[in-house]
Length: 293
Image (cartoon, rainbow, N blue to C red):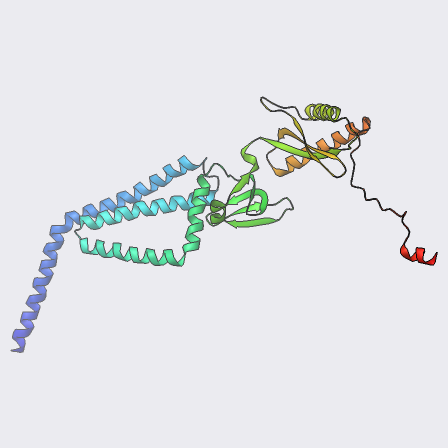
């Protein structure tokens, strides 16, 4: 009875192995085709990465962002090839399980790294935006400086005091920012005031001549002079003009030159630039002195 049982077990194993062998022989063409497809997608991923690198080399100046983006694209292409290979092997259940598992894992990773992924996608957006590039002088989130680095987590700004500020990419995408380097010409504002005894028309013409000679205007640009306030001790005005400026320091330099030139011109014409004066009257006698008298 025992010998019969062992013999039946051996026959069952042999039949099972035979069935597997037959299945392997029948599916061998599909297996070879699946392997070839997967290898082909590996080469396709390699060439797609090179093509993307060639296309975006001038658009994405930050090498770290470009290289990581290329790796992500390669991984996506290889995964597509992997799923196609599983389909050729008729492993639909395995493919469904892999996709379901990938969805669950992706959801868990997305929830755990929500802030990091937000900064990563913001970094990819910033890398393609022409409005902000490495070397630009920007003002954002209360900081101003030159952009020295853009990566997948943050941008690095070098301020005028030589200190570096690291700002998360999501803050740059969500908050407004001012880019001084996006235009080569900027308008400068200089505020001043003259005494009430001044000839206002003469002050206006003199100021316009001084600024026009110091800062030549182009095209439709012009120097503008406008009185805007009767102050406590002066009649105040603002003069506006255009100059070459790609960072905040250029505006400060232009204001400095304009103020020096205006002061010299006013001194030569005896034009008074008053400052607030407080007058204390000592003519009234104190009540104490009156009592003594």
